[in-house]
Image 1: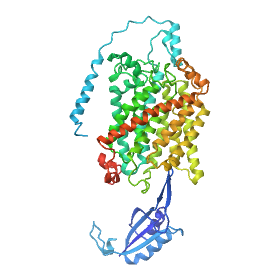
Image 2: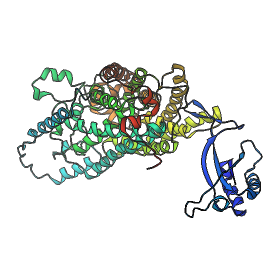
Image 3: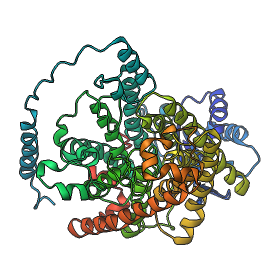
Image 4: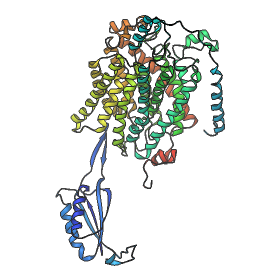
Length: 112
Length: 500
């Protein structure tokens, strides 16, 4: 089992979700987050006072999958989320020790 | 504070005030029935109502007019709407989210406080004109240019009959409520300058003292029947200045006092280092819209009648607000390519502030000039001047209200025309020299004198009040609390919660 954490541009979340759904992936969790990488922030000016905003809004998508589904999902995310411009985000893949579905108490690949 | 003013003592004071108000309700001797008026008298009376003029020559006792009264009740509600919820949203949106409730609390708290003071003695000390009951005739005459009287304490005798010192056709209790809404918004406005770093208890004590020592005398001087700055209505006005809807009473008063307060208060922790952005321009822009709409009650309502002067004030208010709201974001667009929503909002308020003293005295063209000047000069004050002097006026109360209010007053002296307002040539104006100043184009000098007199009261009085409050209970909550936000510390609440 692996967990995929993808940081993507907020307006790409619908396309990414649809691409994952087409692969038969049934669940995911998204969070509105702020952060920065190579993409610079921007300045905001309020009545002449200038503020640098480093942290830009992004969406963090988390999905846990059986090992054999991971590669297809990563490809789908990258295809859907890519604009080719700076700030497209990153995909992280982490090992997952176990998963338990609370209702049925199924474990492992059965639970994800 | 609790040690010196226990709740029991406060309750005792309140009850005493309540009891004092009762003996005043003795039945007045019924007036002898007036002879039945003739048809001619009644036609003349109806004509006087239609033109908002004095019914005395008709021989029929004045009584309230339904049409004028209806407009004034709507106007009073519109002006209160500027504070609740206009300023709650405008000021609340412009501070950081951890202080949003502190702005709501002071809007609500000051509204309640001032309403009760207004009932007890505030209205009387502003709009009364007699201390005669105290048997101090000579003293009362000496005081009357600066302070009202005691005859309306606890609103004694303030009923549905008009007080013809101020308005021929509206009930005095409606006049009283209308003026109350001005008395509420003025102290509320000050605390935009001290936002995010002044304790709620200090705000309330400051507001009480400031209301008593600044608002009450200043408003009497400018609008009281015997006030020495009341050019239009007081034939004995020593400085016959004109201020239609509160350039001195509201805008200069809150703006210049805000500057004094924020200078003594000092900057917010982290000012210039941490980002201090408005937490919701959505709330602020909604609040701006409410302010603009409410300002029709404020400005057109200040005609105290639904007459032609009110109609003109309605028009000039619209044009000045719109013009300044073009100018401010246009400068931003030219300088940086982006007209900001806060630029539109600031422009609207600056323009409406600028036209406040002028709205019932200038024509449409004059309003556009005032709007453009207010937008430009307040923009410079909030950006260049503030940066150069380095003070932390959180919501630019001085830059917008103090500066545009003062600019508006001077321009009123240049642009006022008797075509817009025939009262500029009335009997009182002729007696005190306003008429001559208008025709001789020297009214702007009179306005400058009035501005000087206003500052002579505002600056020392506010300075003393601020120092007194600081000495007794302190002004700022201190250290960590300011970083944490005033909402949790002062009110035990949060504006936005996850588990609400």
